[in-house]
Length: 144
View 1 (cartoon, rainbow, N blue to C red):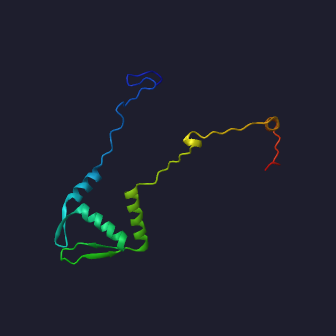
View 2: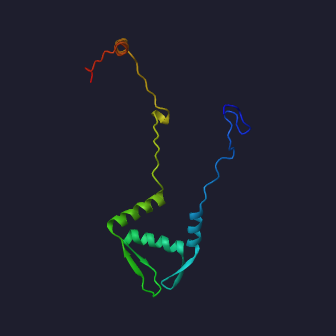
View 3: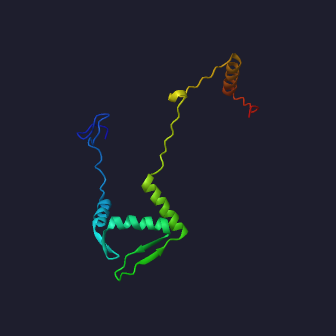
């Protein structure tokens, strides 16, 4: 088992230089195809995507969504408070995107933050004393 075989790679060499193939977006493709079809809404032909956008907006702004029905009497779905809140969150996530987890800190004039700590002879002596005590196993909790 320790010998090199013909399928071994040199250190730092990838066995898959092209990388992992891209994920299939089958569901996205199916949803796009279904959303492109037209449906009857109040006697008018409307693209499914357009109706969906209008239904989402209607749900957010009125708390209810009207679904087209074959007998021209739309069925209304009233949203409860939890459903409305979930729909609002969904809309905000898709309009603005998720919040960025980025924090930028800059110093004076937009440059790097500078930190200067001038150690005096007393603070240096105190630091050395604490290191020695630590190495000797002496614990001083008086500074809290």
